[in-house]
Length: 199
Image 1 (tube, rainbow, N blue to C red):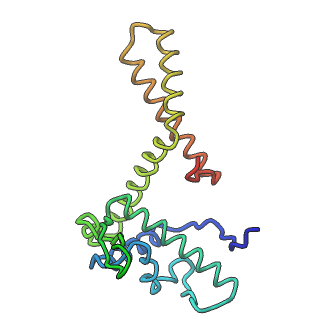
Image 2: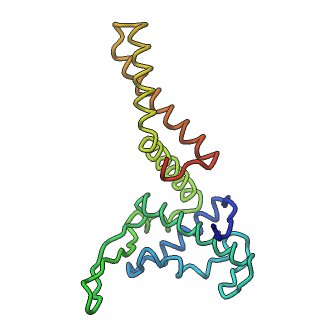
Image 3: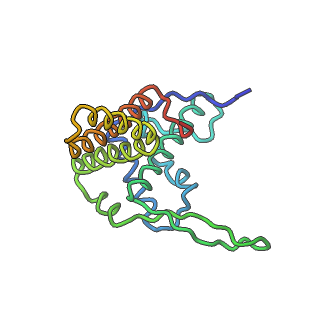
């Protein structure tokens, strides 16, 4: 039986996303924060989702839901920062005493991340939207590459039958159809909440 707390899907604004990205970049500037514990250094922005700080010591159900939502939001923004190269993770070996050295991934802000923090809000917003769309498209093509292949083959076959001598157009139509099919499938899965890693 699953006893996990049900958490509603979080819809955030551009200001919330950018505020969290900038806070993560600020916290990780030293390069001494391990990736798994970044969330612990972000408690000063726990009001980011609804304007009220989270009581981390509370045992109330509502506070537990808010904490879970904050945690999920933090993890997704950290993943975005790493995927978009605002941050890098570098492996360092830590002495574990009697055990063998442990690999720990530390977060290091890149030159792009430092530049992002200095940008005016409008350019930050534009950069986040552009990076988000690009990462979505790349992920869609990876996840639904079978649809890309099928769409390309079908479009290529139809184009070849109808216009055997237009080989250049056939290739363009086939590739375009495959890309559009992959993006459409990914977008529909995203809207329906079916875009899990096991798709």
